[in-house]
Image (tube, rainbow, N blue to C red; front, top):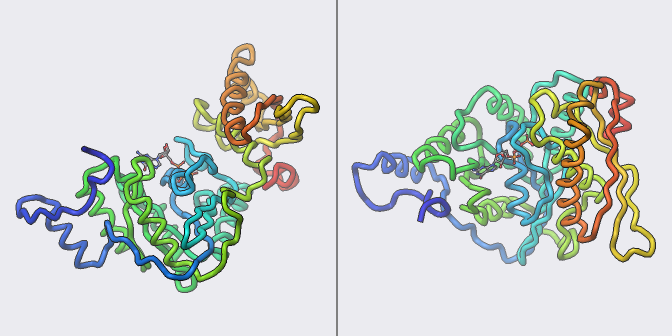
Length: 337
Ligand SMILES: Nc1nc2c(ncn2[C@@H]2O[C@H](COP(=O)(O)OP(=O)(O)OP(=O)(O)O)[C@@H](O)[C@H]2O)c(=O)[nH]1
């Protein structure tokens, strides 16, 4: 079999494999690539967040750990804007994951607000997972984050997570682990593939081991405490982001104006939402020829919303122009930032 489970260390004792040397180095460095944490006798509970450059795989990892589609994912960077929480329920622990936007140098007021959200989140959690993709060179973006994280690392433990291991050879994963270890002081270091499931349990174990002892904070079965309306807005935004040109993603915001069960129709929910863009020209792109694109966006979003709510949905979606909303404090407030 290839893929899941194949990225462990090379234990066959051979001497010619390039991975051998690295595997030995990894073991010497105390890096955990398969290790299972001791299960604590007491119940633990607390908060974790994933930090990393845009597209590092934070949302996908959150979803994989929680086991459902809570945080939105997209191939476009910087799609996560809100601190969405997913809850991992275990017999020995409850791990609440807060998904933050990618930290980046701010260029607009929105950018500054996003970075504030990120820093506020870091100071509130029990453990931070620093995500770096296995197949991408550690660059200035990661170094910037590492420097920021180092400031809080004395109070909040930082776990290094090398993501997307399924995309590269084990040797590349091993090299990335060593690189990340050199970047900053880490409490633990783990490689993972959210897509294949490789080492997902280990990531959960490592994060849980950093939580304080405490009771269950949410009832069994709760997967998120994010208000449903916000999740619905995020699903619409995700659908709208598919296939748009690079400049547009940052200009799209979605608000859910109303979400009401339709009277006398069993489980039908009526949802009225606004999709904001910054310019008239962008509105035309979002609408598409004879509003065909918007219809497609609505249909895709509706499928996901129905899965989330477990009921039939009527979605009324309107495109509106909010001029330069990213730079306007009043409009940012109205759009929920
Ligand atoms: N092959 C592979 N792809 C992955 C994995 N994890 C994430 N991806 C892909 O990487 C892209 C980015 O993943 P996200 O989870 O949205 O990344 P993010 O760090 O939350 O991104 P931002 O919201 O921009 O900060 C998506 O196309 C994912 O499908 C993985 O383990 N393996």
